[in-house]
Each structure stands twice: as structure tokens, then as C-alpha cells.
Image (cartoon, rainbow, N blue to C red; front, side, top):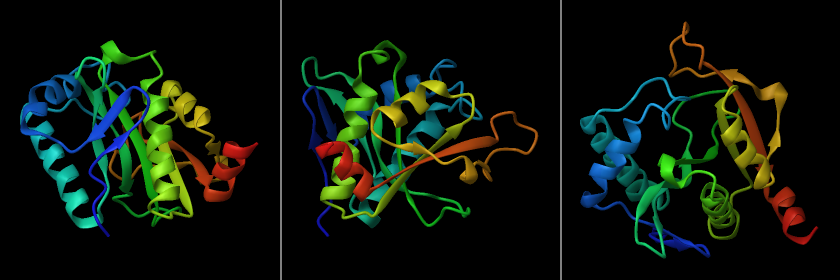
Length: 189
């Protein structure tokens, strides 16, 4: 399959990662507010490594987390995309949808807009049967985005994230799902 290098929504360009994204991405991943639902802040080196892993996912699978850029200003604002879940759990193998935005771009609908675009790509172009999303129980803003794009909470699938320490209060995660059929109903309902 040809890699899906770029997607567009009304206000956003979802594109491949550029080396010049690193300073803003690293600043975002070092912001305690942005990272409050993640186990740790990321250093500049950690952020560079994460970009490398995201590029690697694209190389291997043809899709991944795209860099998000505003069309009106050209500003880098975060990431959104689809990723093979990188651990084993009751719901894996699976493709997850995720997002992370710089704080100054919160509350403007960009996360939902980009996530909806990624979800459409997953069902239309990648022919996925289901997409999942998960976050720590306390991360209500992300759960609101999951609900806004038509995902459904599956309480029977809540889990302890294996990559989060057992003593960390962020370890317990909730799982949301959406199938292709549910997505089509959202479109036509």
C-alpha cells in the first residue's frame, strides 16, 4: 500500500514530520499541562526519538500519527492519527486513534476535526473494521473528543496500561471503540 502522507480537513493539514517540527513538538511534550495525563514529560531527546518512531510506523504500515498544521497560519499545533497498538491487551491487535495538541490550540475544535479526518481515513482508505481509543480515567477532555467523533465507551474493556507503572495513578485506562458500521451510521444518521 502506498503511504498516506497527507490528509486535509477544513482548517488543518495533516502531514509528514519535518525536522523543523522538533523545537515546537519538544516544547509541547515538556509542557506539564499538555502532558498531565501521561506518565512523564518528554525531554528534547525523547521527543526526537518519538518523531523517529512515528516516522518508522509510517515506513512500516503506510499510516501513523501525522503532524498537525493550521492552514491559516501554517503553525505546527500537534499530532493526530492512527497507530497499531504497541502492547498486548484483551482488545489487541488493534489500531488506535490519538491526538496531542499544544495548549494554545485547545478549545478550538481542532482535536475533533483532525480525529474525524483520521477516522475517515481509517475506514475509507485503510478499510479498518474497528478503531479504538484509550486514555487514563481522569482525562475527560480526550474522552469528550472520543464521544464527539462517535466512539462508544466499553466499560468491560477498561484495563491497566502495561507501560505505566503499577503505582502510578494514571495506570487505569478506559477504552472507547467505533466500528465501520457505527461510523457509517454516524455519517448517514
